[in-house]
Amino acid sequence: MTFNPVIPLPMMIIICILLIVMKRKGKKFIIQLIVVALLFAINLRITIPSDNVTTIKNEVDVLFVIDNTISMLAEDYEGDGRRIDAVKENVSTIIDSFEGARFSLATFTDVATVQVPFTSETDLVLQAVDALNGQAAIYAQGTSLNVGADALEASLVRTSQHRHGNSQVDDYENGDEDRIRVVFFISDGEITDDSRLSSFEDYAELIDTGAVLGYGTRAGGQMHVREYPYSEDTILITHTGDDFSQIPGLAIYDEGNLQDISEDLGITYSHIQHASDLDEVLKGIQDQIDEGTFKSEETAGVGVAETYYFFAGALVIVLVVDFILCRRKLGKER
Image (cartoon, rainbow, N blue to C red; front, top):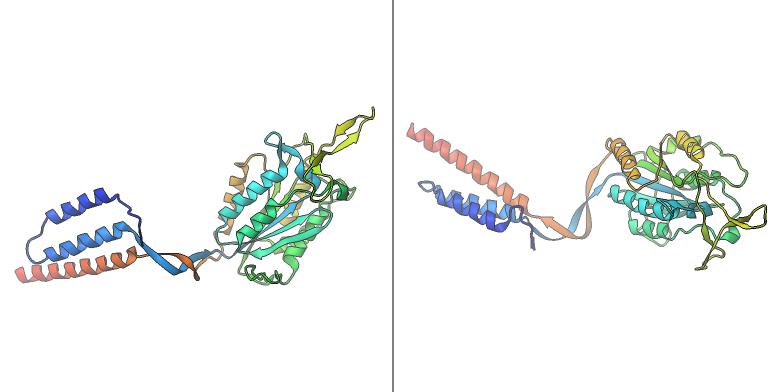
C-alpha cells in the first residue's frame, strides 16, 4: 500500500480540522465527521498491489524501415555526429510517443531484412535498432533505395508473420482493418549503384499515415566503417584523386529521392537536422490517428490499483443522504 497525497498532508490536516471546528448543530455532526474522513482518504490517493493492470491499447502498428547502408554512417549530423546514431535516438523518441502500440523493424542494405516482426515488446525493437552499424566495407556494393520497397513488402504484404519460439511477439494479420498502420521510412536518399528509383505507389494502400525521415547534409559527410564483419576497428572510406592521393569519400544527402518516396506512399516528408525537427512530425501524425479506435484493456501483470474512487463513491452517497435529511427537516419545520 502506498500513499500519493494530492494536497500535502500538513495542509490537508489543517483543512480537515477547520471543517470539524465548523460544527453543525444536531445529530448531523456525525455525517460531518464522515465527510471529513472521506475527503482525507480521497486526498491520500491510496494505491494497493494488483495482479491486473489496465493498459491502453491504441490499435496502432508502427513499422520502421531503416536504411542500414554505409552512407548512413556519414558524420554530418549536427556537426560531426553519425546519421545512424541520430536515427537510434529518434526511434526511441518515436516509440515513447506511441504508448501501447506494436512495433516492427525492417532494414535494407543490398537486401531487405525483417529484423523484428510486429511486437508490443519495445525492448526487442530498441535492441535491434541499437545494433545497426552499417555494412562491412568488404560487402558494400552500392546502394539502391528500391530495396527499401522490398522491406515494405516483407513487412506489410505478408498475410501474417510469426517469430517462432517467442510468445512475446504478436501475430500480425494484414487483413486486420481495425489497426492503424504507421510507417517511418528512414534514409539519406542516396543511390550509388546506377539504379533508378522505382515507384513505391503499390504500398500506399497498406499505410494509413507516417513519414519519410531524411538524414544528412547536401555537403555530405565522411564515413568510418568496419572493414570486416564483427571487426571493432574502422577505416575511413576514401577514393584516389587525380594526383593519386587518398581523398575521403563523402555520402551526399539526396532530398529528391526521399520526396518522391513520400509522394508515392502518401505520407509526409521531413529533413531531420535536429532532434526538435521530429516533434512537429510526430504531432502531425498523432493528430491524424486521434480519429482511430482506442480502448483500455485489463491484462494480467504486476501493477497497482487506485482506491480513491471507492471513497469518492461513498462520499457521494453520504452527501445524498445528508441532502435528503435536510429536505425532510425543512419540510417538518414548515
